[in-house]
Length: 197
Image 1 (cartoon, one colour):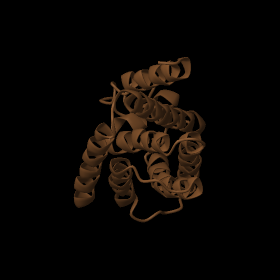
Image 2 (cartoon, helix red, strand yellow):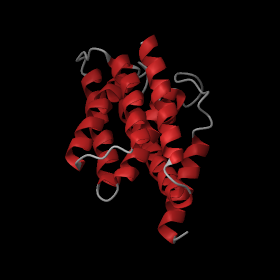
Image 3 (spheres, helix red, strand yellow):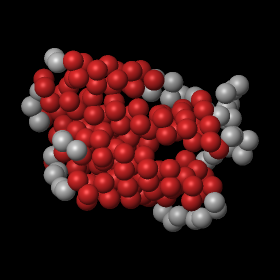
């Protein structure tokens, strides 16, 4: 394993390790009003967690510039979505959009779907709008918006890096089957969420 791959793999492992405290609840405890609460928020729900990791995995599957541009598009539009929520702008079907993101990104991974970078950025950006709006809407009333926002942006970026790392390591040591299985499982979870949305 070369040095860049080792670095990405280490970041992926750290990201997964940080995902372990997903049982924490926003609004509970000494650090419930700032960065820590925001950081934990994307780790608390399986929908957000799978979508963030999935974006990283799919971006790595696309390769080249998409590896970083697709996750960057997600983070940028997610921030805009949170801003809309904080400004009081409504967004219909947020839960449907989040569940749909898990289903679609899982299917994209399972089928190894390729598309132009700009189109991929637009697609994940659409999903990011829903995720960001949910983060902004669920912002605790007593939270400091900038610190809380920095927390959920950091966690999201770290989960994207973890997804990229997982994909790069898996690609070196296995064929396409693990991607197909993981993507299909993710799509099934997304589909079940859609049925309950």
